[in-house]
Image (tube, rainbow, N blue to C red):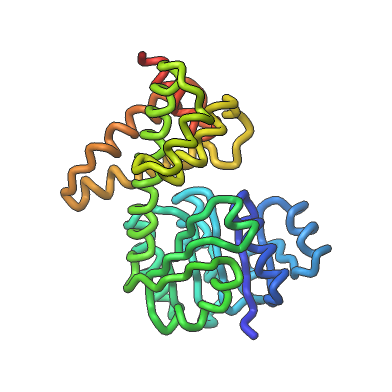
Amino acid sequence: MNRIGFIGLGNMGQGMANNLLNKGANLTVFTRNKEKISAMEKLGANGAYTLKDLSNKSDIILTCLPDTKTSIEIITGKDGILSTTKEKKIIVDHSTVDMSTSKKCFQYIKEKGSDFLDAPISGGPVGAAEGTLSIMVGGSKEAYDLTIDSFKMMGTTVKYMGENGSGTSMKLINQLLTAVHTTAAAEALALTNAADVDIDSAMEILEVSFGFSRMLERCAPIIRDRNFEGSSVPARNIHKDINIIDQLGKDLSVNLPLIKTSKKLYDELKKDGKEMDDMAGIIQIIEKQN
C-alpha cells in the first residue's frame, strides 16, 4: 500500500484527509496548526511536525493549500517537500493556482526526479467532507494511474485531463462559470427583491426553467436570509480565482467580458471590507449600485 502524505487541513483539506483515513489509507498529515495534527493522530493518522518528517513517511504527497504563494513555498521552496530527500515521490497539488505555478512546480519536481500532478478539486467543503469531489488531473498518465486509488477515496468524479497544466486549466474554466453564475444569480435575486417577488416562490419557477443553475440554487437561501457572515466559502476565495482567470485570458489573448464585470464587483466588495462574507454577498454591491 502506498504511504500517503497530506499537507493542509483547511476547509477543504480536512474533509479530504478524513476520507482518506476513514477509507483505509496509510496517512500522514502535516499542517502549521499542531492542534489539528494532534487531533488527526487521535483518529489514527500519523502526525508529521516537519515537512522532512512527512516526506520521509510518504510515497505520494497531496497538498491542498490556500494560495499560490504557499503552493510554491511548500512544493518548490528551499525548505520544501523534496529539499531533504532524493527518493522518487509523486507530488499532487489540489490547490487552485495559476498556470505558471503549475508549470513551475512540474518542472521543479521533474528536475528532482519525481512526478508532479496538478489536480484541482471542485465540490466545496461539503463535497470534501462527503467524499464526492470532482478531481481534474493533469500530468504523467503513469503517475495518475499510481495515484487514482487515493483520488477515488476523496471524489466520485475523477478525470485525467492530459498533460501538465490541463487539470489547472479545467479548474479555471469551472471557476469562470462559478463566478459568473454567482454574479448572475445575485443580480437576478436583486431584481426579484426589487420587484417584491418572494424568493421562495421565484425559486419554484426557476428550478424548472431554463434560468436555473446550481449557483442560483446555492445562493438563493443565503441571499433570502442575508446569511453572509461566517461562510466556509468566502468571497475572498472566488475573488482570488477571478484574478487568476482574468490573467489567463490576457495570457491566451481570449476576451472574457463577463469575468471582467464580475472582477469589478468583487473588487468593490473587497474594498468595502466584506471579502470574508459568503460569495453570494456580491448582491450587496449590486444593491449598493442601484
